[in-house]
Length: 184
Image (cartoon, rainbow, N blue to C red; front, top):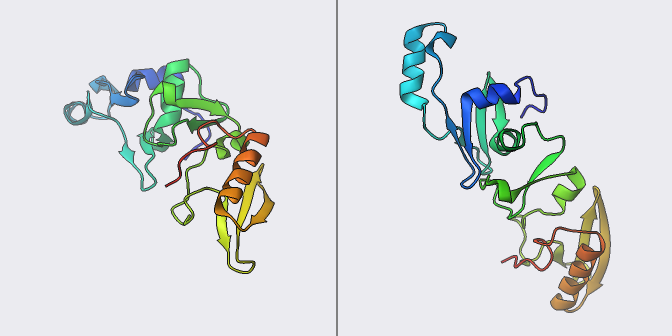
């Protein structure tokens, strides 16, 4: 997705309507004279005007083609609501990347965004950062902060490994949704 913003917020407001309560973006009716052919404009309006904008990508994020460039819907929503493109990452507070309600979006650093990640599909323990270490035959707790993986410890008891991970999450300022989140 493009990080540059060659499209202004004013232009966005001519193309889309944002509903902050549902998180949906809708195409607005376009002036047919803005198309190369009036018939193209009429066709576009009959197919799109008033309809939900964008498509879901395989990871669950909604993206929208604007001026030939794909844009993340959550960034467009932010720009429309606040009147400026976000300068940092947009985090989905509840972890649902298709929930673009303004109450679910926050502008954060990359580091803070990574502190609110969902449990990977490959996770077998049910808790982010806790896994069985075959070599030591113990539960290993680890955490990643600012791109650096840190070993917390090895534990005979799964619950002790989870407690150590939770303590580290609080220590390193992980999002409240992440601390103690049921990862099952």
